[in-house]
Image (cartoon, rainbow, N blue to C red):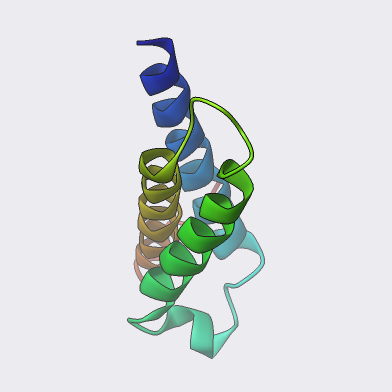
Length: 89
């Protein structure tokens, strides 16, 4: 139960950080506003987290996939905020 809550917390943290980064730092980067950017961000994050989580007991591929999904959703949400001019913190 605790491992599941930590995994969900990590995914939520990834979502919030990716959304904030996309809104603040990537606002004027055209390639970051493409439709494949959330997919690329999510896949790269899931692979990187999967490699790191190989060495941590109790956490595995599910946590890495949740983190990748959170980051991808955060980038997509940040893109939507930029598109609809919702840029206030």
